[in-house]
Image (cartoon, rainbow, N blue to C red; front, side, top):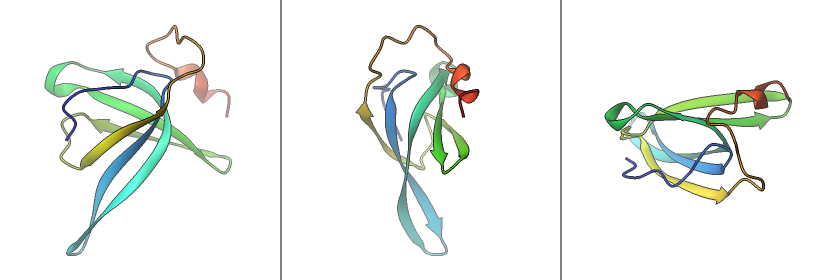
Length: 93
């Protein structure tokens, strides 16, 4: 579970998520660009988008999810992001 958010839309992040397979638990990493952070308080969630080949994959996680181990900020956006929701990145790919 994440206590604080250290990232903003436009950042490249790595989300470490717990995956349960039968009795085993493993960590799967999802790396991509943060498109949005929405909600407030307990209802806050964030969306991450990555490209797998020519196909784009988006995942939405609630901040209070117990399945999130941690979120690493790999890099911040090179330019100042002037939007809260980066939906325009969907049209690029």
